[in-house]
Amino acid sequence: MKKLLITGGCGFIGSCFVLRQIKSGNLVVNLDSLTYAANPKNLIEIENNLNYHFIKGDICDQNLIGDILQKFNIDILVNFAAESHVDNSITNPHSFIKTNINGTFSLLNASLKYWQNLSKEKQANFRFIHISTDEVYGSLTADEPRFTEHNKYQPNSPYSASKAASDHLARAWFETYKLPTIITNCSNNFGTRQHREKFIPTVIRSCLSGQDIPIYGNGKNIRDWIYVDDHCFGIELAIAKGRLGESYCFGGDAERQNIDIAKQICKILDQIKPRPDGKSYQEQIKFVEDRKGHDFRYAIDSSKAKRELGFRINGDFEEKLLTSVSYYL
Ligand SMILES: NC(=O)c1ccc[n+]([C@@H]2O[C@H](COP(=O)([O-])OP(=O)(O)OC[C@H]3O[C@@H](n4cnc5c(N)ncnc54)[C@H](O)[C@@H]3O)[C@@H](O)[C@H]2O)c1
Image (cartoon, rainbow, N blue to C red):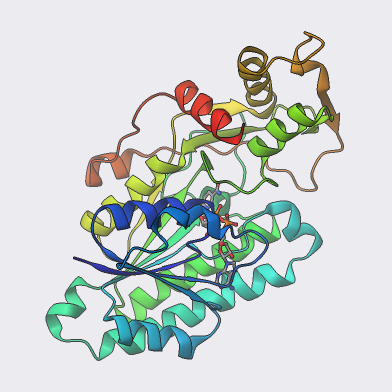
């Protein structure tokens, strides 16, 4: 049985990962400060599991992290905790700097202290997994090759800049102190338990409430969508097989324009929950003023993760979108 400290485990991806770890028989300590983005109900099915421990706290609290690492004899720390919504980073960058940069710094510092006092064997097995995003690489044109681990960091939003800074810290703690860190950079996740503010839940909610479905700009921006369980599978592989100090990119091999995602969701709802007037939900699509500094295209080439870790995507995109839409219904 492995003992994991998972930060941000009440959020969208963190909760999926916590559930998978508990199902695998591991011990999980979930440290989450319960911001507006958290949903403790995501974990209701395991809240009484003896292997699950929830601690409400902030990743900026280095003493608290040190105490948890010691008390639970942690083997693996997986850092999901972050401010994660780009739009919020444009209006309120401060909390992004605090959590994403200072928080990662506290986690690294506390982990280093703990790790330096472990036995040689435990030191060799300890992992600090830092969960990051493809947005650190900036934006692609329509014809450029997909991002790989070799792309230059060129973050364009306060969110991606704060994530880029945190990645650099994780890398530096390996290069300087040999703390066994691994970074994962993933494309846009979709699936169950995502916060209502994000794109796919927003489209579904707008459809059902009869409101306009807001699409930024001309809707032609492209994202590479990965199902949240596929992402979590990749993280598990990185823990088990990832080389120390390396980063691994995970993508869904599913590049789609935002407008096409919105239309596809409308089509699904037209079939499973038709509008009372019999018209298509597509009638509610409305183009709105573009996001400031809106990146045109993100896409990931997961070749390294496939080659070194055995990463693969399970099932097809359309099927998983249907599963997700049904969940939100
Ligand atoms: N959602 C995506 O599409 C996506 C894609 C690539 C990478 N990522 C990265 O994956 C991670 C998880 O993303 P998500 O979509 O699940 O985020 P989320 O916003 O759904 O959840 C974040 C969680 O972190 C917690 N948190 C925030 N600040 C905290 C703090 N200071 N201390 C402790 N807990 C805190 C929140 O309460 C919440 O439960 C993030 O690091 C994000 O950058 C997300």
